[in-house]
Amino acid sequence: MDFKFRKANFKDIDELEKLIEISAKSINSSYYSELEINAALGNAWTVDKQLILDETYWVVETQNGKLIGCGGWSKRRLLFGKSESLNFSESKLNPDIEPARIRAFFVHPTYTRMGIGKGLLKKCENEAELHGFKTLELVATLSGEKLYSAYGFKEIKTYEVELGNGITNKVVAMNKTLA
Image (cartoon, rainbow, N blue to C red; front, side, top):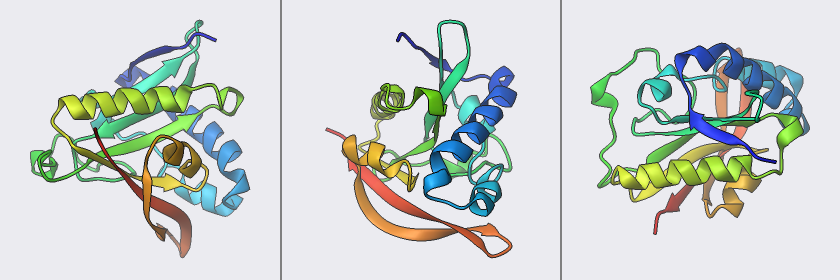
């Protein structure tokens, strides 16, 4: 199947939020409870508008324009979730000594295992490298860990992310050195 990769824009936000919810509730259901998934949606699993502003967020479409995947990278400190303020320059990373962040990857469950995640990772890695980054880091959901491991990311540690009201999600911190 042919897919189109393009940069996300603000007109995509509503459709991206729907995609994230569909993806999270389907793909993560084997790893997290319904309560954990619902707590993460709109909190840890959401669209970060800063990625769109920075032009580092990608979407994947079918030939008829349906959004079926998304993911990006960031030159800012936030590892996941959303920025509360936009364009705050003090949050920029130093590519000489800090890793770029891989962020907000979601694929529609009908389109898993078709190379969408790998294609997004390749685009993000290439762009981060062009911006001078030598390493990448991310916080993987348990469902995403397999993809990132297959793409050369190494586990740093596993820990729990607090989502509020005593609800947590187990995640895996990972990194990768660029060639």
